[in-house]
Structures are given as structure tokens and as C-alpha cells.
Image 1: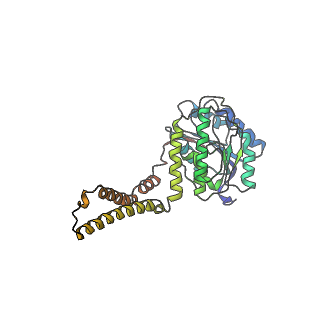
Image 2: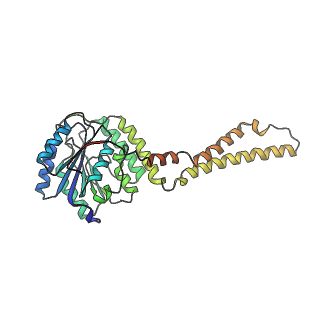
Image 3: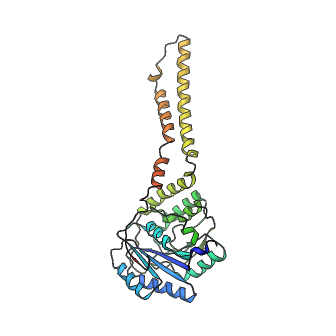
Length: 326
């Protein structure tokens, strides 16, 4: 572990939440028992992602009796990625643990995750909920996305989207999570140079309160995010390896077709053969289109992706209140 001077506590627990008023008291109490029982110095960061129930009031009340609890509330729902990114920026723990607020992740897993990160000098431990209590409508698409992510990223984890993860402090301070990229944090970390990524089987508990906050649309968004992050990770620093190759192929084919038509026209004139004008042949327009596409591929697509990646507002969100933080 390096940069020891930059953290002050053993563990930071970052918990994004949306309308989890019922589960918060039990969750915070459980985490505190685990931390005290293992003599950890710790902080709990609850990120209220625009809850419409009394979650923030519950957080305020809990903070009165637990000085290790900190809270941040967004003015509206910005998504899990924004909540995690905000929490990561505020952490001061040597190991950062993320978990969901619905009590489906067990705080009892925290000690072993902490000791593995420290003792094995790991960057990320991703939880693997081998036995799940989700309906087939959720587990089957999840397995398909995990398979696709393994193939595209080269990171062989069973469950990329598990909320329970442990991070070396350096990881969360050197990555940025935006859009809906939270499900691909291991991929983001890998592209940032953190390659000591492993998994650990963890308990998946049945939901005790409320209902899931994620619908089927997350799978469509997840697939698009996977394509985006794979492209950016591979070609952001060398875009011409992708667009340049496709552009060169299209331009070359168009140029060869045009050259052939020109040669054919000159040959016909030389031999006194009457033939169609070059511009009257369908192949001419095919070649012209390919040349234009070839040129545009050098400029289009990557420019749009660069604009999106460098947009200063991609992680812009309004924080309404804070507890225990400057």
C-alpha cells in the first residue's frame, strides 16, 4: 500500500441510497457493531440520491448518536454512479467498502474484505453473489451481461454489478464514475492501471424492506455503457487505430473503384469504343460515398466521444445538504 499519508481511517463505507428509510437504522447499527467488534476506525458515508421518503430525516437522526456517520443529500435523483463518485471523493479510509442500503449485502463480510485488500495488496475485491434471491427476469439478463463484460474487458469476474466491493484507497481517488458506469468500475479501474482485481463469494440476503429500484431498462443501458467504456478504454489514447483503420479501408476501396472506372474510360477512348460517362455509372456513386465516409471516419464518432468524456458537467449534480463533512 502506498500514499499512507493520504488516509486517516481504516475503513470508509460508502452507501448510495434511494428511499430506504426502513432499512437505514438496522444497517447503520449492524455496520457499527462490526466495526467496533473488530476495533476498526471507520466512517459511514450515506449518499441520499434524491429520496422522496423520510430517508434524510432518518440519516439526520442517526448522525446524532453516531459520530462516525456522514451524509450527503442530492437535490434530485442523479443515479448510483453520481452517488458513488461523490462518496469516493469524501472518503478518508485506507480501504473503501461499497454496499447497497437494502440489507441484501451483509456488513459481516467487511472484515475479511479489509484484511484481504491490505494483506494481499489488492486493488479491488468484487463480491460474487453465487446464490441469489432474485427472480429469473433479473438473474438471466445479469448473467448475459456478466458474460459479455468478461469477454470484452478480459476481467474474469462472475458478478460485475455486485454492490458489495472493497477498494484500495488509491483506486477510488484515481477513477471517475459517471453516467451509469458504476456497474463497470472494475473495467474503469483496469484501464486506469489497477489490475489486481479479484472476487470473493459473498452472501446475498433476501430483501427485507421496500422494492428494487432498478427496472429492465438498466440492461439496455448497461449494454450501451459496456460498448462505450470498452471503446473508450481501448481507443481514447489511440483513436486512429480504430477510426483510422476503418476510414483507410473505406477510402481505399472508394479510390480503387474510381481508379478502375477512370482506367476503363481512358481505355475505351483509346480503342475508340463508345462507353458511358463515369458519372453515369452506379459504381461511381458507390466509390464517392466510400471516399466521403472514409474521410468522415477520421473525424466523426471519436470527436463526439471526446466531447462527452471532457464535458465538465457529466458529473455535475446539486448537493442539498451534508452531515459531518465540510
